[in-house]
Length: 228
Image 1 (cartoon, rainbow, N blue to C red):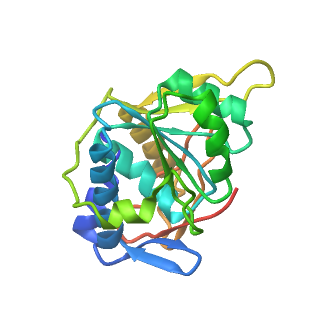
Image 2: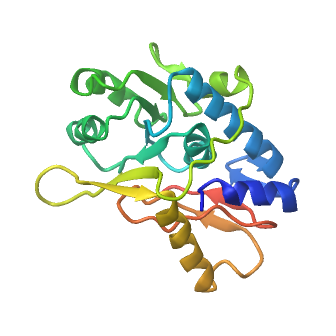
Image 3: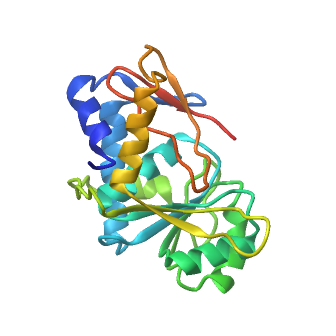
């Protein structure tokens, strides 16, 4: 069981179907997979190796969907951060997880200055918003456009897929480590409930906490990203 297998299956079954819709952007599975593979290549170029953590603080978007697959495609593990955490709590999660690369969208790009002081282990910041890229931060779109696609690392089974931080009422957030098997089993549970059997688009939202029920849409289904 591996987290990227849904995308591989969609490429085989419905390559030209719409994969993501965000604002005025629509991308097919072929386009989505190409961007995923290019982002994965960029992450590897930045030094991301097997099991390395790559974080994100962002509202939902098509780039968030790409990130969720590109990180395991590169061999890494995702560390999505709850947008309601303070910069101090975000820094704690970065330090605790050993995150080396962090993506920030327009809403959270100003947080980079504070995190540079509080989370020195984060070596690279990537701007994944639609606005101008801040100084000292890499551009997501430039990385995708300027990097050749790479092959899937095919991390699977008990390999670490992600660390999700709870937002408890006392103390600092606690990181929950989830494997590829954990994620795939969760997705199969969603399928078994019948929720994904009906045709039509799916609205994928990312809760950014310790429970995750989001699953890449299957063949013939499309998803769009929405704010939460």
